[in-house]
Image 1 (cartoon, helix red, strand yellow):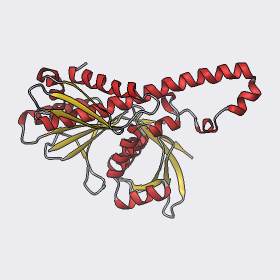
Image 2 (cartoon, rainbow over the protein chains, first blue to last red):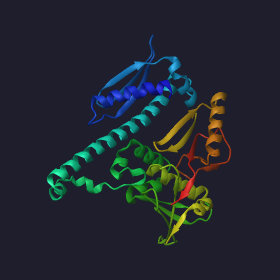
Image 3 (cartoon, rainbow over the protein chains, first blue to last red):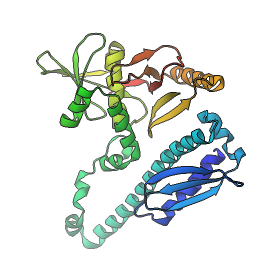
Image 4 (cartoon, rainbow over the protein chains, first blue to last red):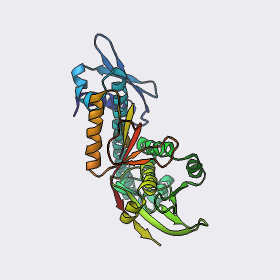
Length: 240
Length: 74
């Protein structure tokens, strides 16, 4: 692992160690140019932490991000830090969830199934597994989900954005056939082909590989239908 | 300034490069070839949220290139 990334990890771990229950959001990464340069990481609760950063720590990172000045390196490290911190928060949440489940199981054993059922938190009802074994609520919380939705919204036309905000779906026109499709909020089985009156003709299911977040999947579906519709539909499964 | 946006599990990873810097452009071209070689599709994003353009080859003049992983049927 790159030395700069190792330093970032250590700094981020400090913040999690400070308040594991309610982890603060990562605000900024700065590089202090002084006799002894330091890498600073700042969090939403005001917590700041730093570590020395030597030029040789940064070479691999500079190379990978093509960052050849301090500002570009700072941006690259901020991107890395966001990625790493999101992963760490996810792992932290998964660990707490495992601990909580162990506790619940123990209570169920002690109190008996009937009483334990009544003690189960109501929000549990909203937890259902999606791809990769994570839960719906967990995914919503992650920064990755927000980044995906931001990327999607940045690349919708004003009309599509309005549809998405108002109805939770947006329409695209097939680049080759001119057919209308509706892409609903979701990661699979979320594409409807429409007739000229806006009625559903059939459904299509395709998505990019790699267990991507919802925003990315919807943007990939939009781009596919607009730019390589025929190829996409050859891969897709049709649903009546 | 050009940027390569690669879709991944973290949402996306962005690689910025200065089009005036020959070394950075060469690295960007290598990244383009590696990703498209792995099956990613490169799309030149349109500014107004329009359809964009499918890219068959690297073009350093494109401001934002989105890399979409290979599609699969569900």
